Image (cartoon, rainbow, N blue to C red):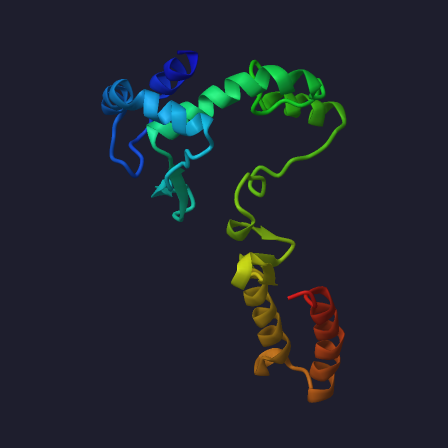
Length: 194
């Protein structure tokens, strides 16, 4: 019952089944014994999530997955049971995603140790949606994670090369080649993993 109260209070959108919270309540009244049995015998499988695009302040979008309300209910029930068992084993300094604690507690730790956090570069997301030290990641065949030079890093590289080789720079060919020989091997060595 506590799990249902939590899911009902949050509301949230309908998943791939198209059922709102109200319709899910009606569905669960009629089908709960079968759902419970499939969960207990291990045959219960969550359905795929409904994908929606969320606009971002920088003009881009990010994907959000919305699970069915039935799946959210089962996840919440599991969380409430497991949290009582696992939570006491966490460090007292572990803050986020725990009852009665917030990520703001991390701020206090950062202040205490004089650590700086760049909020513009800090996020929790799939690795394939983020760039890290000039690399972008993606999943290749068979789910293997691959890396490549991120678009921004490649654009910066091309701009530097154009800057070195522009005709209006007032340098002779030998100076241009020397600058390229100083820059390109370092860039190549840094991005050798891609």
